[in-house]
Length: 361
Ligand SMILES: NC(=O)c1ccc[n+]([C@@H]2O[C@H](COP(=O)([O-])OP(=O)(O)OC[C@H]3O[C@@H](n4cnc5c(N)ncnc54)[C@H](O)[C@@H]3O)[C@@H](O)[C@H]2O)c1
Image (cartoon, rainbow, N blue to C red):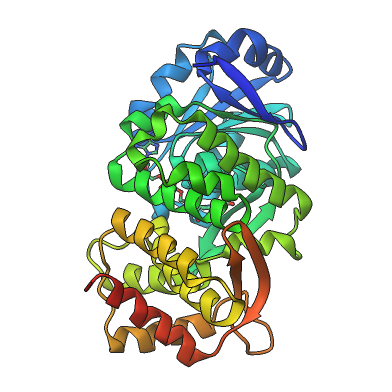
């Protein structure tokens, strides 16, 4: 395995490789430019990932801030508590914050760093697959508010991102698969070669698949760099997400063991692929490949008619809608996405029926 390589350079470098190898080449240079270093972790990344980071000489004297793991940590109150700790630590603007964790840590850690004293520098060391190929990249930071996801937030870029795939070895299998759903989406909207690569492996083989991670990072980074403030092209990343967000919200409110975001995305991709066939000319042959692949990786989530009615009402409130029309990103080929499609309710509901029928075969 190569020790370290740079996937992209601008607007900030993203490296992949063995994190200990970064030290001499990079960390010492980066860290000596800062007055203090703070590392934000949750209880799992403290246990599984922090020891490796603290083994790097440059980080030994860093202050550690621990948050509870999970989506419920992304609150404004936790951001206020972080600012309280920063004030107690007397941090100046030349402080470096290190977000060591999944998307929850990079979202709240990036947000709180960006607001404190009008902005501390921060870096992301993502430790989940989803954060490596998605959440840590693109400068969206934020917290949830009054039941709405990412209601408060700012666009703010990290100084650098370091991806060490080794961290995935302790990640629960369900989390790994959920992250893999976003790789599938990246391939479907932009990179047919990435699609050809992923269908040959199982998500559990990702540990040896630097090329797949690199390509997925490149797709996300390329898209967000073309449209950093989400005015147009960045919307292609919403493929599968209009229906996924409704299913995720429904599941969070109704299930004891709710779906993970990526699991909802997998369902959303199947439904929005079905819609892509009907209104965007995607061939049935390509669509069948997508249905078969995704349904072989993820177990069914049962959705009856009553749930569909609730999902439709959630979809109508989606923040991507404009002038009362539900906004979809759809594909016309594997690797080719089109933004701003409208779709009527009966087709949305038909696509969800199709999803459940797929598992009865
Ligand atoms: N900012 C963005 O552009 C963006 C994009 C996508 C998702 N997100 C956000 O990301 C969040 C989801 O991120 P996530 O899926 O990484 O979830 P997460 O951060 O909650 O991590 C998932 C679980 O894995 C644990 N974990 C993390 N790394 C581990 C490791 N190496 N070994 C063992 N356990 C580990 C965590 O403690 C947590 O329990 C959501 O809040 C979502 O809104 C943000």
